Length: 423
Image (tube, rainbow, N blue to C red; front, side):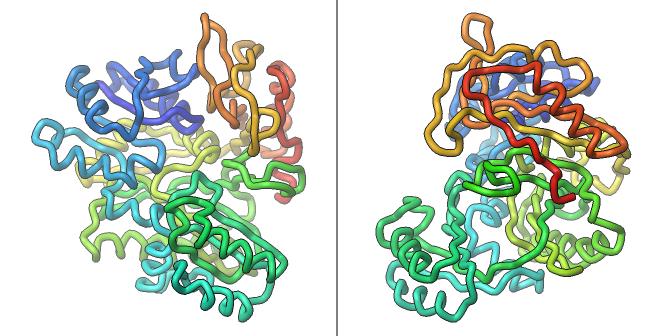
């Protein structure tokens, strides 16, 4: 069959890498794609939120399956667009409906969902500009640090953690009355700070059955030792060494099962991934957030460990027969390190010539923010490239990725040298 992947990052390159291996894939398209996907598929320059343009491409190229990478088109209802169009309704779309995507599209909705199904999470309240004073009073009831979250999508930048009560009050005002994050911060969720170690659990569901995919740990901060500003992710390791059988059983029974059951109870069409961001407080798992797609850079360590044919898995999702799939995993650790543009996550320059990536042989190279110019790879984003290695020992996997990074160069290239430091 002909398959389309929507998106342009490392996650989408990793999907392309796996899907291209399937004997069921005839032609592969990625829109808009990057310099890495160009080697595996046909890149099509279109906006993933322009559903009419997506439709035109799908019909012109006789595409039978669409895999949605990023959250925006899901929250904007790309699944529903396909299902409500006679010409598109039979095409398999991997991603939830608009109602399902609200788990990521609205922090408030996610918290209400967790409360409804007794899923463990931090205590919280939500506020609007009209209830700003009540929000400031609520902050005074909490102990520092203070966690403020913009309700809507804010490109990974809508969460602020502050130690000082006056700064927290000023930030709340900035978000609600000055619209710091635009429409995303018309509602702000304030929640208690949870102290522990984070991990991510990924679930693939057809809305009825589900498979729990490998765990991963992502490193969000720009600086060594988890210091500095939040980024989209500087590296990841899978599986998570501290996620033992006892913890995974708690996660399965208290979080995964009630999440999938809650979606079914509410009759929400959900054929895709659920990313559950967790924190282990003592020995207890609690949910920090839901995402309705695979994470990035976690995809770059989770998918390379899955031996199953990904297209077959997606066919089973579309047919609601995921219970017929048995997950086959590479037992080795996967570790990835992200190369980023100098200045990221603040102002950075694009268009730097990148060399050396084609010389890497014993690691996987996933392009994140790259494009081609006159046949040369140039930087086109904040996060530029992820280097993934596999080994029985996660430290040796990381060593291999770091060794290979030495072969790659572009002006002002930056990366963290301590991924996995807390494992």
